[in-house]
Image (cartoon, rainbow, N blue to C red):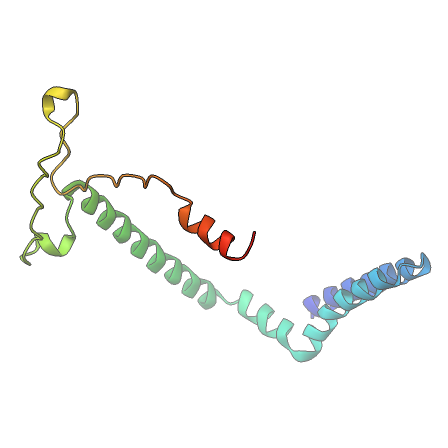
Length: 148
């Protein structure tokens, strides 16, 4: 009952603001304000407000939301721990539980030696890809094709 009264008051105030806006000859804005003002009354008449207010004031509904929040928190915690383990071990969690681990790639002959000041990479890490000489050659070809 209280929610319906509040929605009616909000709609009445919105329609009043729309009337003032129309008086100032801003008809497009007045029509938009009137449309927004009619939404609360429409929600009351369709029963959505009664459904929402009935749901908000039930303790069992809040307990359900609490359980959903707890489930989400547990899920996110396990994901964070899984990611941390993946970063520390350098291999997927399934590989540590008995499945065959992927074979490490032998270092290339052109790898820098430790004497040149380069630090050794941890096992399982890939070498960063070298940037192509001309990053934009394919873009330039497309632009030339279209005459730009």
